Length: 168
Image (tube, rainbow, N blue to C red; front, side, top):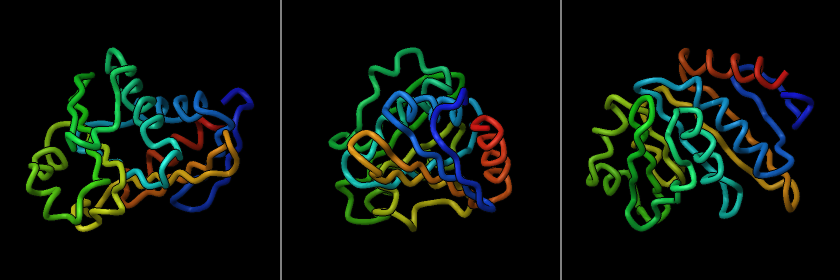
C-alpha cells in the first residue's frame, strides 16, 4: 500500500491502521474490487469511526459512478447503488432487531444478485448469513482508525488473503 497504514496479521483476520479518511477510502476501494455477487459486508463501529467513509471506498471499488452520493441511509434504511453489480447499503442503527430488517426485504438484498453492506450489523446479528465479512472500525486517535476485517467462511478467507497482499 505504498507504505501507508500499518497491518497486523492473524489467521482469518487482518487489522489495518488507517491514518486518515483517505486511507480508509483506499482500503474500502481495494475491498470493493474483490467483492462479487452474494458477498455480505457487516460494518461495526461507534458513531464517527468511519463506517460510511468505508462504504464510499467499497462502492468506488465496485465501480459506482459517484461515491459522493453515498450517505448513511439512517432514515430510509436502505439505498441501492448501481455499479458493475448492484450494491445494497443498509443502515441498521435505528432497528430494534433482525425482524425489522427482514420487514424491509433485506433477505432479497442479502441473498440477491449484488453486494450487501450493512452498517450497525451488530444490531441485527440474526439477519447475517452463515458466511460474511465483518469489518470493525475503532478509534485510535482523532484521525487514526483500526480496521479489523474478519472472515466468516472460505470465500471471505480468500478476500482476507488478497487484502493482505494489497497492504504489503
